[in-house]
Length: 352
Length: 282
Image (cartoon, rainbow over all chains, first blue to last red; front, side):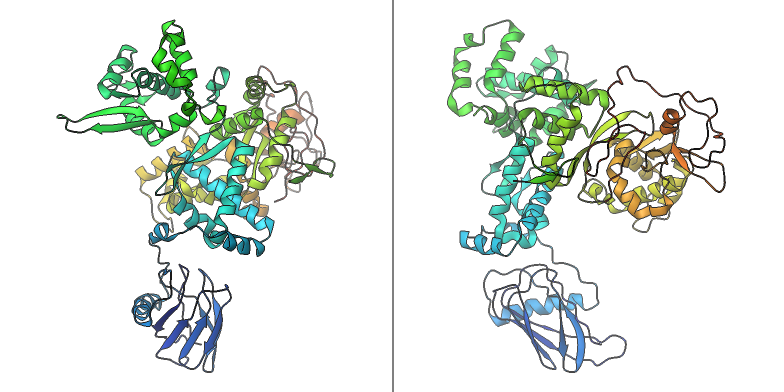
């Protein structure tokens, strides 16, 4: 029996490539096979074979395999590997690509062509594509995908890694990408109605999201229940400093203020550990703070601003009240900041 | 609209969640597992913070509402007893993958293999523990990629920190959360090999065994404490031979009052005491 394995890692469009086949366990040996994919249409694939030519019309999706006969040899499994192309390409270029990939596979080893060009090439499907896609799936299937995306988001968020749309598509949505908008709508609904969370796009160009809390930050007893509790207090102090100073402060100001509160970035703190790392790395990664280089400074100086997560999650009014309690002052006595806090643009999500 | 099956088998519409429910759920997500007292306190605080009606002793019903919404996500807040102290715990468990691959985000392939081998040792053992020596020997014969001694210790520390394993004097056992979350996986992989408690029918790793060779039933240490409490002549519930092991005291935390009586339930809702429980067939 002859066998050829080409693993489809991307969506194949019109393609044509050559493979040479080696036989296994004493069979006939064919020297070349031509695979031609005529156009991208429905997921079904028709295979036409002759003794040396196999033509596939239709598109071949990742992981798909099908049997075909070559001459009088039956039972051939073919899965196709090519890198993704958006439009039918001319025969020449596809042939060379095909040859390169197919050779890799014949040893039986070849794995997926797993490069990252998918993030750039994923485009939002049109409404009609979504409708067509939905028509072919059961609600249960869509629900299952929703659940998988939600789990994926939680795993990423637990490590405070911002979630990239490209990753969601590549690792979870996969073959359901033509109904991606519908899945994400369902995901958003679930995150809100079950968890009180929301996906916020922090990088519109590269489609990167963070998960933010629609519920207000916990106070009082509840604060004790969240494991990262001590650090929230530290964060609030820093956010307060930045806010009172008009939205941006030099890092030296933050360190000096913290030192007065007996939190020294140079020492290891009992509750916070490596303070400098928590403030400049952890809080920044979590998008609570921005730690930005001040240009033309020698030696290098940095400044702090509020991060996007702080903007969306933290109520400036509450922060002013917190400062008021700290300094035993009426929050409204800081007129500029009070005006800033109560302007409509800064009302956090939970209070809209 | 989602429909779920309630305790009596009738379909019910899933109730939409209030902010108190969401807050509770978020806290459970942050903590992973909390003991019964903390869970009850959390219930109160969530209701008070968000102005929801609070009824003490209705924690399980409160959780049932949340679980109805979590079911399509393959998540559940479950109630279980710890093998360590016999106390009640609530844990948010993932039911989508009944395999250790749920941990694959945090651990490398060979580290997961080590964890599986550690689990093998624990399930095989008499007392539900694996010694660090035995684990180190496994590390040396991993199929994926061998781990050195220092690396193995590091992985074990992380597994303890992430609350998958408990370490006591060089002996490792599965944490309560691990057992609660992986019970379907353990049952599937180990099948008849794994010990099951005769009293509560859950997986029993730390347990006592009837010495009668034709009987050999196993009972959780904490189930033993409850079942034989106050009896001067403890007898095996199956073969009635004398129960030769030491009967431990039932551990009483300060406020261990409301433990609702066991009810017949077919859904994976939080369970009651150790007396009788139905396990979820996965």
